[in-house]
Image (cartoon, rainbow, N blue to C red; front, top):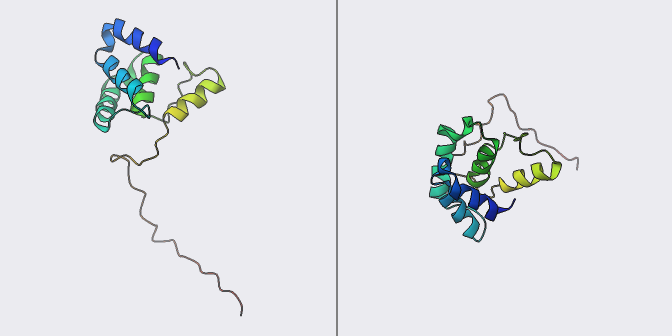
Length: 119
């Protein structure tokens, strides 16, 4: 949870490349959120290479900043309940992203029922 320490490590690790810039943007935003374009770029980066990275902390940090892969519980990094809850709360999105799939159409077998009250 210490963003300053995470930024220091990201700046020293050449493999993190542009990640330090995303982390800096995240740290300095009022709502600790990346801009939509940065979030989208980081999601693409996560899907294309980071999701298969052997580094569990790199995967977790990308999921936090890009608010992606909420189904991954990150058991290697979330060993305590409070770590797990913190990670999941970081991934909460109040708006529906543009790439979020729409709900399925109503089933044709579904019949609405009406409640009729006696008079």
